[in-house]
Image 1 (tube, rainbow, N blue to C red):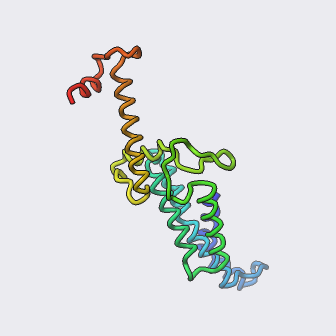
Image 2 (cartoon, rainbow, N blue to C red):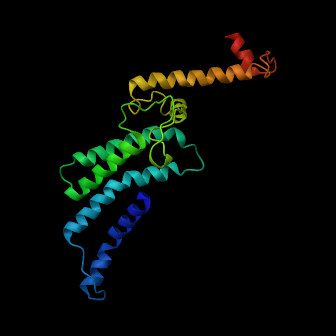
Image 3 (spheres, rainbow, N blue to C red):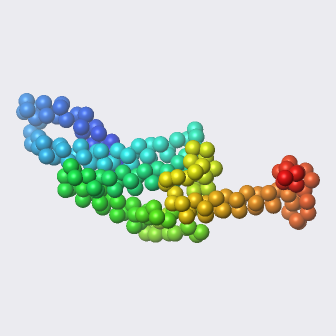
Length: 196
């Protein structure tokens, strides 16, 4: 898990001065990390940080998190792409960023050009290779993301809107009948629908 790797690197960075002091005083018989190795570890920590923070944000149990997923997936894709294009990072970190990006795009969430799919797409290990359309619907209904811009392409925004409208019509249709396609006069939703 990226989360535990990130926490390990964060802790190593925090303890590096103490570890270096132990090595310098010969209380520990192990070679010290070189400055190049420390640089790479710091870069990898920085690469994993957005992923770990995203996981942490989605662990909330006192608030709904599913509507955050499309936005956070978009942000992670952008962060990985920026790391690949960053000319200041080491080749090994750039290689890791490329591998993570390729896995993210090819085996998890796609390249972001199309995010709405009428049917879900399963990939390796029976994992979704795309976001389920109900996840996009929850983002659409969340006031923070109602426009779905910029994390859902414009063509897909129309599809999400149509899908939500279809879901709403199904709810109204179900609510306004008693199960045998007879009007249900007890339903407030049905009465509201007739008034409009």
